[in-house]
Image 1: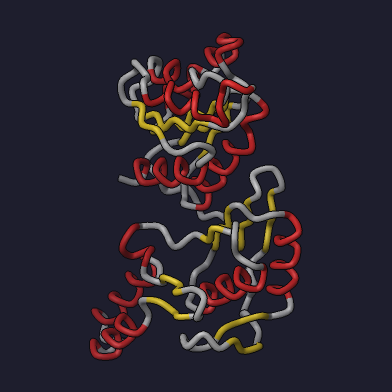
Image 2 (image 1 turned 180 degrees about the vertical axis):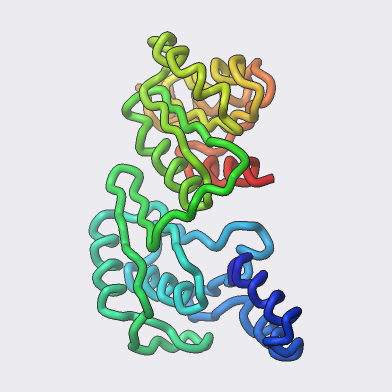
Length: 270
């Protein structure tokens, strides 16, 4: 159940259209569905402001499709799947288009039609899939996602798509790293209007510090595993970002575009 559905249910109770006892039953019996291999959290949107997101790595296409179908059956309008390989994405899309659905919460699959199946879209570079359309932006301002180099775009796009699916206007500034600082400064207006900036960089990881010295909003730094030997798979960038001399910079894990996009959305909706 998402926040909108909860509001509609409470409004129906207030209007006398739904008995309080019926509403209590719906709230008590819908917290999660037990599929055996997964317990799908249907109340996360109410508790945290954003519905459950599927981490695709390590899950089979059947498992992912079953989870998606269960979420749609429970009334969720959109689903985000991260770290999904192309071959798995193709199989998941086929399973969903065949009408896979779960009924009940005992983990026993049942064939059926998912009503009004939302569009399945796969983005190769960030390995992200979306089911359904992004909502209209309702955050307090734009989220700027900036990355140091073209090689960092795969992480930046994971952050950008995550933020968009959570109701944020996203401005992308790509290949604006410190090797050519004038490229970043050319976007001073977009940076000044940002409510939060996600700064993605590999190599020496200097971009978040530079951005932090230019803006008055929070900066979320994302180190990437891009770089030569001594970058240590992103550890050098991570340590540099943790030691930033710019105020207002926080850091997420290496290559964790999802975590940065999610955090940016929380800030933008606070």
